[in-house]
Length: 84
Image 1 (cartoon, rainbow, N blue to C red):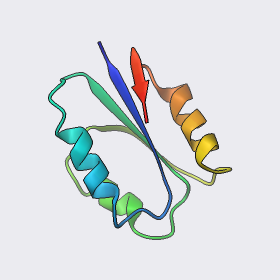
Image 2: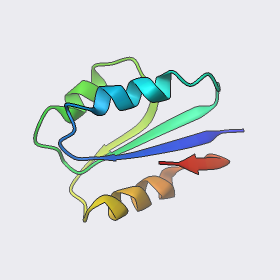
Image 3: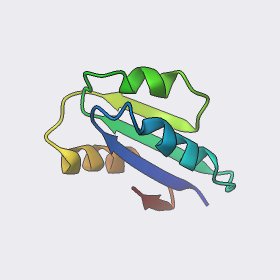
Image 4: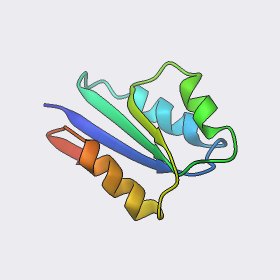
C-alpha cells in the first residue's frame, strides 16, 4: 500500500527541513512525498535538494495559492492513501 504525502510550500526555508524529517522518520516503506512549491524566493528549493529525503517529485512554479498547489500534487499522486 503506497502513501502519498503532498506538501504545498512557499518561502518555507525556515520550516521545510522539519517537514521532510517528519516524512523521512515514518517507518512505512512505501511513501511518496510530493512537494509543490509556489516559486519561492528564499532558499526553500535549495534546502529540499540539499538533503537526503523521500521526496519523489518537486515542482517549483508560480501557482494560484495553496489549493491550486494541493490540486497539482493530487493530480501527481499515485498512492492508495493520500494526505497533506
